[in-house]
Image (cartoon, rainbow, N blue to C red; front, side, top):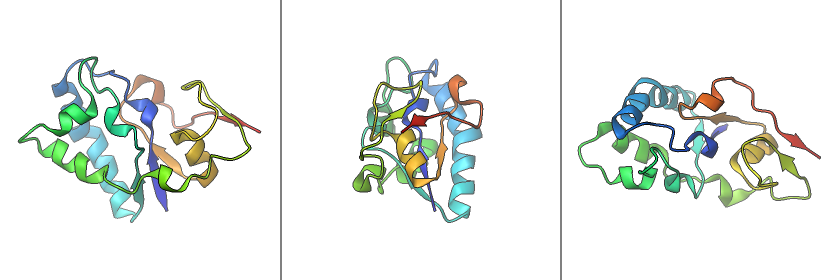
Length: 136
């Protein structure tokens, strides 16, 4: 079984890098630990590293931070496999949700097609456990 990283949960919402590191240590990494203990794969997307953590810093820029145990751990967790390597949502269906204009081949559509959960970073839009996606 797998879980897909919700790419829509990194939109520059953290006020600074320290707030992001605190969120990693307090919420995100403990959740990843549970996922690993359940022997589940963590699938990230090809674009995950380009996502904005703060208004000025992308995840890729933070990955170069030296001396951060949180970043080192996150880097190891976000390495392959990538969900795009075997697309389930690139088909005839159209997937609609409030977080993107894309109609196929995005993280939430992929999770729907695979019937698996998504893992979100701390984000005000993803406090609820249900994300609605319409599709035909």
